[in-house]
Length: 493
Image (cartoon, rainbow, N blue to C red; front, side, top):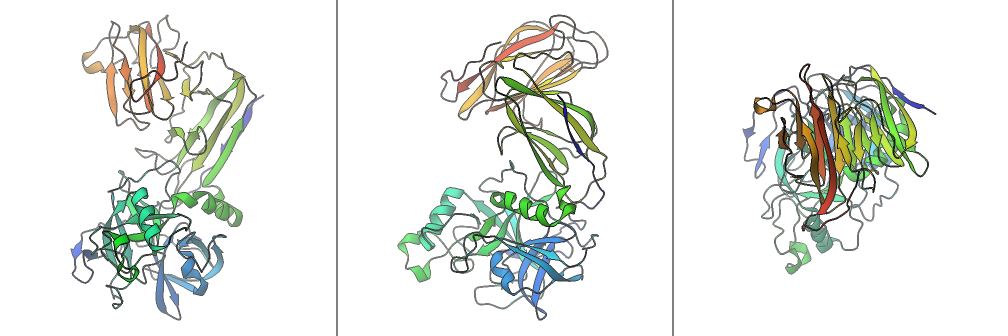
């Protein structure tokens, strides 16, 4: 039996990409900070009470903005940099937020009464992808109209400050020196020596981190801190009133399911932009996904609109965007998750997928992208029709994922491809990441290549041929080896 997944896209604006270029103007009004260029933070919102600013927020869609829970008990209207003013229609505060313990679950969604009109000076921010990582030491940005120093005055010009992310272990340790035994729902950013930080009035605003494609992602929501810009070296050895902290921000990635649930419950508009399907088949079967139609907005890294296939809740095994029809996917598992994510802009037609349960020894007459999860019978990859000629204009892709703490070893048993300089025509390309940036080796010609090891738990193979001179192709098996060199899970063909 076949089943279908189908979705249509709708037009809109682009998330996380300011139309105004940032040329930083340095200012001594915030230690280590700058005055923000007008228009460089088009997603930033000022929350006001009786015309006075008290908190920040960030635009997610035409109707929804994201802020800190401790801000919204007194919010009545919002006012943003593009001079659009709205009253609040709906307030959604996280159910576990407690005013007696404001450091945890400090997140809220506000629905405005009316539609925000996007333009050069008003744009939405990108939410992080479920599997997206922003590593310790990455430089991110906080902006707002908060105080210029602890117990100082409010500025008349929007300010921004660059802060490096602090590792989660250090962040959790620091929070325990300030408020022990509290749930850990935060990320930290800021230098150990202090001097750069957010301050009162910046609460609710976004902690922004960059993607390689130039788009900005809301990684955190400004929540609180011990003082403003204090040194937090050797915190435990200081009296409580002299302790400091980095900036403490609500971890947006941790709350993605909550955001999705709330927006889906209140807004059919957003529902078309964050959809998840869970597919399960009987024990002893595998899952075959066949793409019947595919037209999704394209960018180089599939960070904007994309369709992702997961093994488990957060383990992405493949991500698709663009207009090229993906090959069928054979998932070596009895369950998988298919998720469509879109920002508030899109301009493509959509997709439809047919899926069904197949036997674990299923073979497909066409080129199939084999998505491997650790198993006992999924260790063979080979070119179409092997050992017969593979044909012209072939484009196959395999994603192999080893268990945690293991790498992938690829062993070739037959290899016969057209020979060319730099393997320009027919080739097998082995890569260490899903985006094709981390190239391990490119192979072509005759002769058996030596074994290939991945750099991490992921190995991606791509086999392509041009329109002439096909060979027998290749046959290979893969196994998983622990990072200390011992044999892990051995797979056989």
